[in-house]
Length: 298
Image 1 (tube, helix red, strand yellow):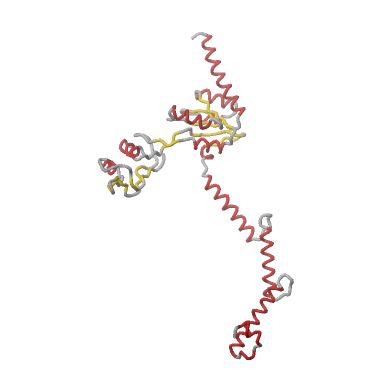
Image 2 (image 1 turned 30 degrees about the vertical axis):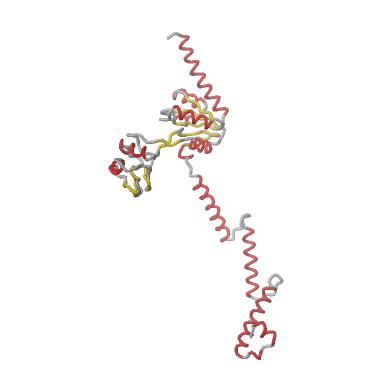
C-alpha cells in the first residue's frame, strides 16, 4: 500500500470520528442501538419514521468506540458490539426509547430462532377451510377442529415458552396463523444525556403502571397526612373542614347555643316535641291542641 493510500485511509477514519464527535456535541441525547437482523428495506422505513426526531449514524464498531471514548462516553463505548449504530436526538432518553420502540414492526419467527416471549395461540375460528392443516396444527399441540365449515382453535394453547427454540413445523404454523411475535427495529442498548448513562433496563418503563403507582402514592400520602392531622398545604383545607364539622357536631350534641348551629338545634327541638306529642296523642288525642293534631294528622 502506498503512503498516499494509507494516509487517505487514516484521513477517512479521522473524519468519521470527528463527525461522530461533532454530533455528540450538537445533540442532547446520544443513543447506542443494536440493529441485528434488520433488513435494508425496513431500515429505510425506520429512517423515514425518525427523520424529524433523530439522526441515525452507522459506522465500524472500532470507530464508534474511539469516537465515544474521545468524548468521555466510555460506558457507552463498552456496550458497542454486534451490528451497532448511533442515534442522535434532542429528545430526552425516555422519549427517544419510546420513539424507537414505536418504530419497530412485528415479524414472523424463523425456524431455529429463540422465542422472545411465551407464544399463545388463542381460541376461536380461523380463515382456513377443512383440510390437512387440521392435522398439522394438532401435531404441534394446537387443539384444532372443524366447525361450521372452518378450522377452529378450541382453546388457548401456549406452544412455545420464552427462550425455547422454534422448530420448522411451529414456525410454519405461526406464519399460517399470522402470528408474528418478533419485533424488528432499532434496539436501544444504552443512552447518554446530561452526564448520565442510561441502560435499557432503566428505560423500559411501563408508563401506565408508573402513572398508577404515582397516583396511589399521592393518595396514600394524602390519607396518611389527613388521618394523622398533619397540616400540609394540600391537606389543610380538608383538616379545617373536618374540624368545623366536628365542632358543629359537638355543639349540636351538647345543646350549645351557637349561631352556626341554632337552626339545627331548633329543628332538633321541634322533632323531639313532635315525637313526644305523637306518643301523647296515641294515648289521649284530646290532650293535643288542634294545630298539633293537624300536623300529626290525628
